[in-house]
Amino acid sequence: MNAETMFTIIIAILVAQFVFDQWMEYLNKSRWRAELPKELEGIYDAEKYTKQHEYRKANYGFSIINDLLSFALIMLFLFFGGFALVNCWAMQLSDNAIVQSLLFFAILGLGSSLLNLPFGIYGTFVIEERFGFNKTTPKIFILDMFKSMLLSVLIGGPLLALIMWIYAVAGSYFWLYAWIVSSGFMIFMTMFYTSLILPLFNKQTPLEEGELRQAIEAFSKEAGFTLDNIFVMDGSKRSTKANAFFSGLGARKRIVLYDTLINDLETQEIVAVLAHEVGHYKLKHTLWGTITSVVQTGVLLFVFGLVVGSPLLSQALGVNEPNFHIGMLAFGLLYSPVSFVTGILMSLVSRKNEYAADAFAAGFRLGESLIKSLKTISVNALSNLTPHPLYVFFHYSHPPLLERIKAIQNFKQTAD
Picture 1 (cartoon, helix red, strand yellow):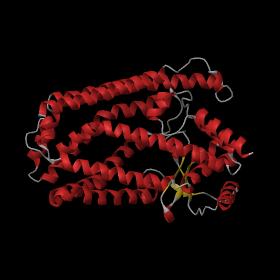
Picture 2: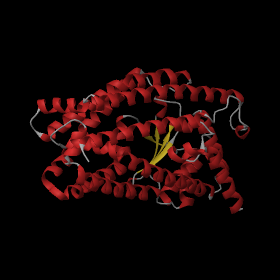
Picture 3: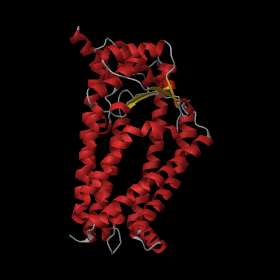
Picture 4: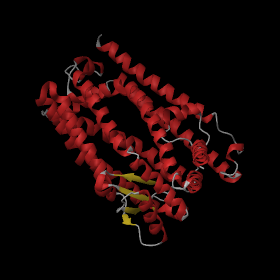
């Protein structure tokens, strides 16, 4: 195989991925109906459903333009040597291989952020604003952007530099040492993300004493779940959409409730949402998710270590002398079909886990409350409740609402 053939393979992968993604979006769009579908009666009213339909249309048109421009840009970069040009700039700015790689990714990252900025502004301040979701001020938007970039530099930069140093000194054992470092970082972030990173963007306060805390503590005692860390996050500073999540392992575990969730739901419904999150922990979904990510990273780094130094990869992107960052970029493009398949498998497992966590909550007589909470959250977010089954198969990490409701009701009937 020569560099020309490798280049053709990369182009074919990107074109196939783009066409497939657009086909999926079209299939999903084909399920939309201007009138309220019968299966949504009692969930959406006609007025709310019309608003949901308009929200879907606005996001669909916006995403098409975004996807087309992104695809056109990467095609231009590939056909006209854009990556080779950025590589040349990086090499002119430094003689150090690690610094060159950091500069290469910094230039691409900065360029990508600037090009995506108008889309981020339009999506937040036009579409989300139009449908009543946006609470983000221009100040918060700008601060979020700079904080994210700063974190990429302060955390991503040193981590990437360490992996490149390992590549330079470890030889054939590069993948193993890089795996140890990457796994340690993932576990660290799983345990400390909500206490170290999240506070840079959102304020978290302990849930105050009162009816809700008492109800949560009563459930925790019944479920045999030690819960010391219940926090409320000021999600309303950016959006009206509600959520809750569980993070951490062992003593570092923490449940975070959005303030919008507390405002939108009744006490028993919030307890049901929390019971679902506790279910993930009790059923070891969080632990197995971390283990799976660690194993996947090991396989990825092993394969990457075998090919990163190949002249073929660099030459396919127009760079004669192989180097780490060009090899990494080319490998990422070639690996995307494998990522696509593993993504499907991960989504299947994730949907299965969601059903199991719902059943866990229903097992504590919280099935009806969970159904009510899921309806409220979905309707308030103008969610698409009738997605195409193929779109669900390839893209959904959570089952559609109607399927979750059926599963909870079936569990209740079986339990009774």
